[in-house]
Amino acid sequence: MARFEFELDGVLRQRKNAEHMAQKRLAEAVQTLTLLQDQLKRLDEGVQTVNQQMREKHLTGLIDVSLITQHRRYILGMERQALELARKIAEAQTKVRQAQQNLVEAAKQRKSIEKLRDRQFEQFMERQFKKENEQLDEAGTQIAYQNLQNGYESSEN
Image (tube, rainbow, N blue to C red; front, top):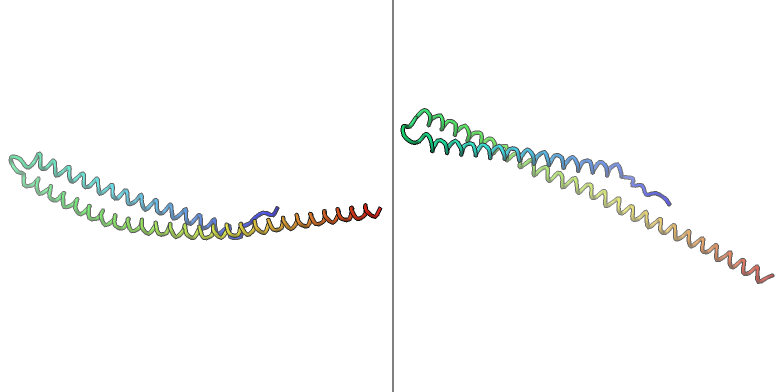
């Protein structure tokens, strides 16, 4: 029996590789986004802790104006860091969306080649089935002819 060979097998391998790379880029983008979100969460927790400590320990009794000024500068610095992290998170979310779109496109392209391969394989199998049936029909015809010849020769004797 003949063997099926898909002529675009190299293209299919390339499309699978492109899809794999798109998956990898998406995973990297998601990882970056998660890290940035974790940094923002830790920054927020740190600010909440410092604010709580300031309320509990330093706002009773004598008020130290320089400590309050330092605290305010610290909070402003943390707000700037939070804004920068928020900007980076927005960029990372955009990259994640783009990576998702790229992955979807790569998967579509791979699937289109796979569908073509499957159709060609079905056509190949149909041709093989037809050839085998033709060969069986020919063999049956030859056997029937032989039987007729043998029957005709025996009736002449």
